[in-house]
Amino acid sequence: MRSLGPCMSTASGMAPSCIANGEKDAGGIIIGIESTAHTLSFGWVDGRGVPGKSHSSFVRPIKGGIHPREAADHHTENTAELLESLLKDDDFCLDSVIAIAFSQGPGLGPCLRIGASIARALSTRLEVPLLGVNHCVAHIEVGRERCRCDDPVLLYVSGGNTQIITRLDGRYRVLGETLDIGIGNMLDKFARAQDIPFPGGPRIEQLAAEYCQSEDKPTLQGLELPYAVQGMDLAFSGILNAAQHLIDKGASLPSVCWSLQEHAYAACVEVAERALAHSGKSELLLGGGVACNQRLREMCEVMAEERGATSHVPEKMFCIDNGSMIATLGRLHLLWGDATALDASGVRQDLRTDETEIVWN
Ligand code: AMP
Ligand code: MG
Image 1 (tube, protein in one colour):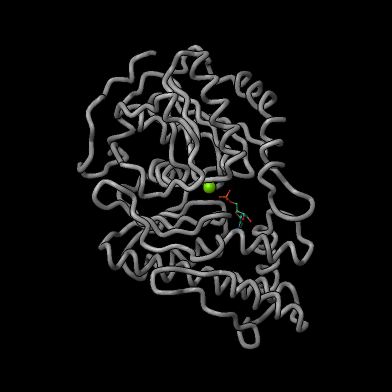
Image 2 (cartoon, protein in one colour):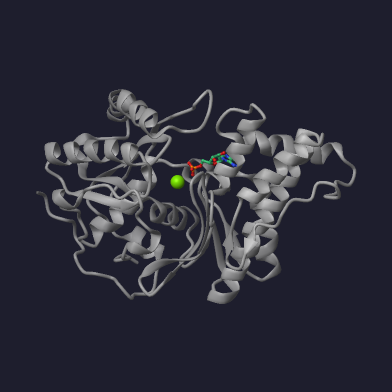
């Protein structure tokens, strides 16, 4: 095995600083492999953490949701082509690769196992360290890196996850989360019932915007949905059922899409605001596929401004699942000498955000 890079000390307990992370040079390219659910992606970062292009393929079921085995088959079928396109990437150089990072969890078991197998094979073949990383933590770290924020509260809104997270005592702690389904999953399920294909979030956003523009003063009267906030937690299945009920009673699809967004996003923003207040932090960071949503971004900006905080969101390609974000976190593990032994590289479907010790700045 090659050496683990220039910095081997542990940084637990130090004040966070993503800028300091960027000043360190890992000495070569780190490949990142993402395969937790619907996306298979190969990305990379250079020694200073600057991301290269991610080469990705997405499962897009024509009917129904994502079937874990079918998604895993998709990943298997697309591996060779994606790897080939990574190798053809003009900026990428295989000889400069110094480590292979992969999503170790959380996610769908069959999908995770494909990414982990590819990572083990590459790491063994290239004789470079293997780095198993926490997918949720990767969303935070790529956001910190891209937005240059140091110690944010993360509003992580994706298909399967909805969490409000912040760093306390060397771990990212979950301050609040969904008690049932992820917000993206709720949007996709509602969309599917209206014959809108996966992913439903972008089309719901478009219909909501059209409704908003077509109304002089849009009002929620007659379009009320249950409130999703439960203390610091959230729950979305009630909203989903009630939105379908409005459709069944004859409300127009665009009006319900608008109401759905207003209710669901307001609930997330409320819990995020409480997390900022309780933690005393002043940066809000958005991550996950639903963070692509313009209305959610606006709401977060308004809330942050009103309380003298700032709201940050990375470019869309870093909100959705991608290999570069896995490489971003892999690089931090590598810099702090935290590689994964082969016999500890088994996937963890249920890996929690706060199980991963933060050994980096
Ligand atoms: P992820 O699980 O992080 O890969 O994100 C996928 C989820 O993001 C799916 O549930 C999508 O419906 C959702 N999504 C993507 N773009 C948008 C958008 N513009 N508005 C709302 N949800 C979105
Ligand atoms: Mg994700």
